[in-house]
Image (cartoon, rainbow over all chains, first blue to last red; front, side):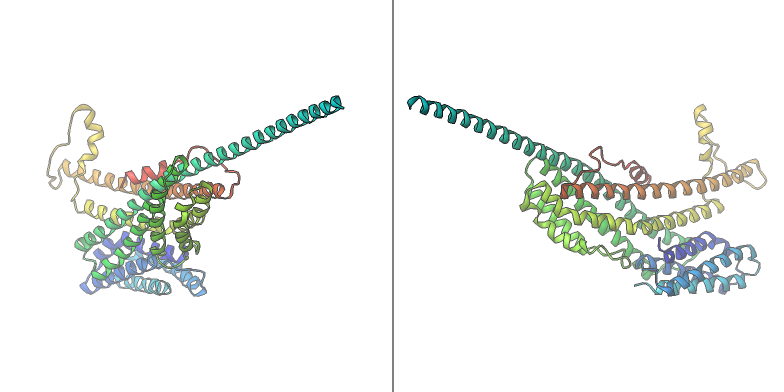
Amino acid sequence: MGNALLALQNQYIFLTQNLSMLLAACQTQDQRDAIQSQYVACRRSYFNCVNKLFHDDDPAVVNLVGQMKKEQTALEKMVNELNDIAKAINVITQAVQIGAKLASLAG
Amino acid sequence: MILKEETEMATIGVGSRRLRAKALRGLCLFLCFGLLSACKTSDDAKAAASQMATTAQDLVAYYSALATVMENTIKLEQLQSALLGTTFEAQDLAQLQQTEEEIQKRSNLAKSLQSLSAGLTKLTGSTAATDVSTAANKLGTELVTIKELPKGPPLPAALGEAGQAITRLAQEHDERKAAALMDGTITAVSKMFTAEKPVCQSLYTTYFVLADSLAEESIKRNWVEETGLLTPALQPFGLSPAAVTPAAGTPAQDLSTVLSKYAQQQLATQAAAQEAAQQKASEGMDQALQEMQKRIHALATGSAMPSRGSPVSLADVEAWVSKL
């Protein structure tokens, strides 16, 4: 599989599997909205990539795939630190933004 | 003098008979070679047609199953929106429908390939010019309208050209020439499947993860009747689970807790098994398409067919499709 699609797939799977837990950890509606909004952005990036299935031999894509891997590790660590949900939202937002950049290189 | 002429005539007569016998032997040899060659082509054509028929049939099933996966994914996204409040707007629906439409196009392509294989099967036994022509025209149209899933590794360039060339198949009425016309198309279809296989697998994986997450959420919220899990133990004795509403601190609630954990384990086990089944189905489909391509190519070029045996088994594809 193209590394770009795999990176976006892993992010989408991770957030799908943990969405309920992340929402439960939120203390305010703003926090819940932020999680929801990042989740939807992540899903759109994944299907955007599926619908374009771009070449990922572009150096810019290779670079972003590397960043996505680091962000994925940060996401996985973050699940164990849900007491600081604001920090978790930041990590998710950063990861999803990189995913959106990756998907935008399609086509 | 007369005697000499008679002797010469006799010699000529013997020579002529020898020549005729030699010519006859030559003709016999020529006919034998011709017949052997025809037999080989016919056997090769039958082997190619049978592989093509089996493969096309299961390719239809594969893409139909994947179309069902996309339909269900849309339903699951809507369900997730209702359960967890995630946004699923018209643009999200359109995005998923675009993927579904592309899969549907591939399903239609597989159906045309199936019709063409039926035509080829008839061609190996009798005349089927009309059937083949109709199927070939349809396949050509499908190939031209289809696009990559969607951009990315472009479809093999041969695809469009092959679609047009194959429409001439009917006039050829010759197994080898027919195969030669189909060769490029079949190769293109096989290459397309190989290139897109990871995307198909990814779509199934994300679908199953989404289903699994919502099933788990339903179990957590006590919306699932788990006592059915006791059935294997109770059924042999004609027993059935008690219909109880668990109350806090009662044994029934303990049972519900135990069964909830068991149900979650079942989800994890089945998710892994389903994903593995889909991967095996994709591998099997890919292998069968490559075998079909090899046989058609061998028939087209008159080279030795690697195998004329039974078509490559697609049991893994059929097993996966049956579970959807």
